[in-house]
Image (cartoon, rainbow, N blue to C red; front, side, top):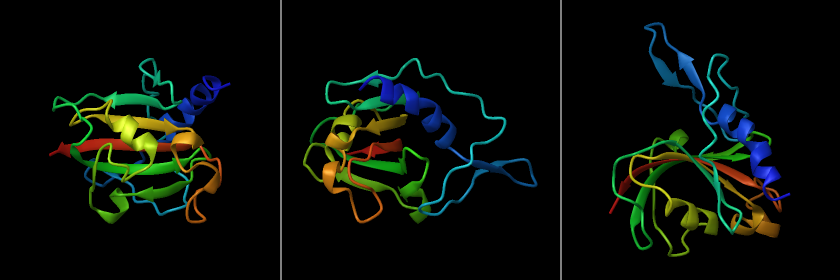
Length: 164
């Protein structure tokens, strides 16, 4: 069952991860969304390769969708990321992109949920990745702020911007 759930979520994650709008000049720009809104997948977007999905012993599944060339993230590093958080139904509950600012934290210091501390250590600067976190390494039975229900599996689309 643990391996079936992440596999079943992959099409949702891939179709939900990015939404673009076409401008009059033909340039693609990120479409703004608001918390709680569902992403509408672009009609012509090709399904990304999911063969590189990795599931760790904790249940974290990560998929690197774009490989960066920067240094690897290690415990103790202060990492700077852009992220969007989704529920499995596609509803967005948070995004640094909507605030037009990156999010920084020290990896492995317990400043964020366990799935982030673990997941970021599989990435490097420049990586774009999807993290699928089971409840045990997310918010568990308590949920969060009335926005994330108890025992929710969470999906995060992350870009590692920098490491200090």
